[in-house]
Image (cartoon, rainbow, N blue to C red; front, side, top):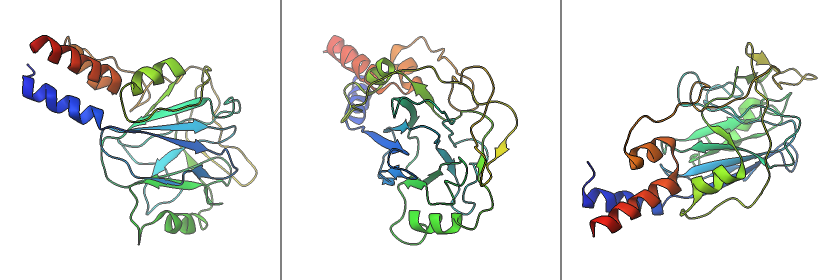
Length: 238
């Protein structure tokens, strides 16, 4: 049961959340911006451009996916409608996160980025320098750690927060499936197969089971929905 104080605190936290956008390959082999500063509860929206993807991975193993929970992979697509295909990741920790493009030799060529990276030592430049020595980038088996969303869903997700994406468009993603693949100098890491990637985490979508509207919306990470629920309950209580 939420108390009045906890609802007010939750509403203040959600109102302070931000939405960040990153263009993946719009200007060649780069993420723009290359680095971000984010906070827990923020949302990062990757605008995917043709024949690029985004994969999270550890600093000490460049061009290699995150092992276990906590990582993300967008999938790679030939048809992205020039950035209108969007991969949405919810920020759950303020720890540094590094990511790269696993298509062909993009990672080795410096297409890397991250958020909350240190200003010295394990920087984005240091990660890119180490990536040059990697023989081949690795691609996860399937989409994980985020969602491919259309504009209406993103509008609902970001309603009431500090900023929102401006690009528009829609499209149905095609799934990556099969065994993990490795990109070569002349090959493409774009996975093939059938099906539709639907979920964050392990690659399958989950639906909140809580009967409480605030719990359900918060579980999905739908900031706007939670804020609306908070304000509605607060108005009722007062």
